[in-house]
Length: 478
Ligand code: NAD
Image (cartoon, rainbow, N blue to C red):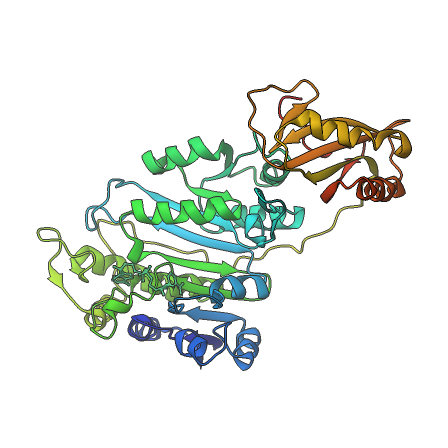
């Protein structure tokens, strides 16, 4: 018996949760339910997180959380419970299978059967943003080696577990050589540990276009957070079935399972909603807790029900569908099909083992050398020469050389183009005069002198070499 935490959520949440639980219990799921309240009522009671402290204790104790969609009230100050849950509980992996159910559910891609594995904790979603000048704001894109290793390994282990043939990585490392470059590098390192699984890398733009056009050439896809957020919605939509997709959020301790859609408040309380998305989440949960036979039984009965043409309003189509049903009737139809298999759609068989991932092991530290510094300056001019003249005054006293100025990444000094548009945000790169190492205190002196000269420095970034390899981007055009 596995104890699980259940939140029935808002809008259509309670109806689809009741239907889902009824189905999996009828199929023989060995679960003990502990219910908590999250969402709208909790928010409106003044808790901006949408969840009470005691509920966190329940989730952490049970480790497995089945969550119906919630309504986030309009207006400022309410924090997304999904984002908080993922980050608090270290749910680093978001898994979203997107499969078409042709010819029973309308889709342009009858052969589509992909799984998007999205990194869930870092990238631009670290949420570290600052306004730095009148004209420029920034968002830090953080990519870590443990983050990459965990998600890439998860994708390959998932492929192995579910007998998938290929893992494809999407990044934009032709532009972001450090961040996306690390993701791609780790992908290549880990791929060799899985020789039986094909692997490939696509630049995200053309990869996304290919996925939207010919999704059947892909199998498992792994990618950083932002790309995964966007493309997993695209994938669910083009499979023809946003209302049919579930998702799993997996961490090394805890896991959360849900539908991908929201609380559809206008459909609430009318026995109309399709419970399939949450049921798909519940099936992933059953696999996660090792109740694979029950998962298999439910999935096959669900496929059979779709194939029978027993459809809720959202997928009902004259000609293809046979019977329009409500939420609870749909659940009853799936229950009546338990033990049966689909004949047109492919029945599933799940491996009788659960997915186990090794602990992340930190590597020995590299030799790290400080070889320069980028000083970011706020200056209202649009003329790079004016900024250069000001900053060149810092050279002699500090034993550093101003080697380059860029504006939004493009080199504008020396030898910039007059045509280049400049904002008030300047990156000024200093290198040491002698040798290639820079003393840390030289940066402090540089900033102090800049302050004395009235230069508005907004931040610095140290330039390092790791094991002798420069680990920073050049100026564009440098
Ligand atoms: P939504 O997914 O709730 O609804 C979009 C459309 O799809 C609506 O027309 C709706 O009727 C339909 N739909 C969704 N699920 C359905 C189902 N199971 N059966 C039949 N039709 C279904 O998106 P929205 O309207 O943008 O958001 C409504 C609320 O849900 C908002 O408060 C939003 O913040 C919240 N939301 C919650 C989650 C979550 O908890 N995971 C995710 C997304 C949105």
